[in-house]
Image (tube, rainbow, N blue to C red; front, top):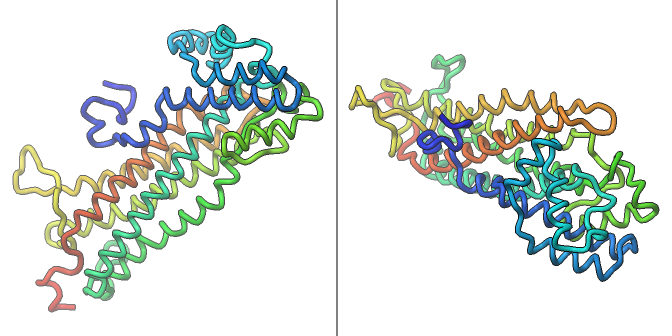
Length: 357
């Protein structure tokens, strides 16, 4: 069995999201790290910390460098991070005095992370827009239809399909607003150097940070956030909120699709190996599973906020284990929710029940 359901040869059919997998791929992450190193060389050359000509030569060599990933893996086992071996490889192809000096491994890796999260945010925001549009279409088609309102899973009073759809759609709009608010707190360049104080950069530290941020399309900072992880934890919380709201949608659909209730008709449902008559609401159930998975993982991301002194190896590497899986789960949830909404052929109380409403 594979280490995760997201890349298992058969379980990935249920859990994988190719778009998110591409964003999180080792090749894409390496590209982000190289982009930081190239921007670093140029910014330090501009500030006079590196020879300008050597800095430009280094930046060009970094951009086109071929990196030995096996060597990075071997180095990570020894150093706890891949950057020392990465820098050593880069110095074989470019002026060594114009590469990485004044930066630290966490500057490279955290900046690469937020470059990935920027792509993640674009992907998830686009999918949330799509889901909201599909819910609007369902509202236009079925919104006026009657539905039995249920409290504590028991019949309560008559509502309309519009009322139910509104409880699915409204939180998604809130999540889009939250994302716009937190992106500036997340998409920040990481530059601190050895102990997070930018001491090696002298009075040019803030200018260099601003130049690197501008080159990468990130927000600048006046203080490294090596040991201040509330932005990453907030992002993880947002991921769980998104998948949680979609899980509520999935839970409702699964209940509405039950035989005997049949308040929703779906196409493309799952079958059973033992009971051919069954139409299992697999997509709806999967949304519940992904929501519960993220709800558990987000607690680990809050544990990862606890960094000792100026930098932590233990807390930092915990993020590497947890956050990618949360990203995969959230992306998969948005993809599944999109297809689930597209599969709804009817929503509302079945004709046999409407005469009693």
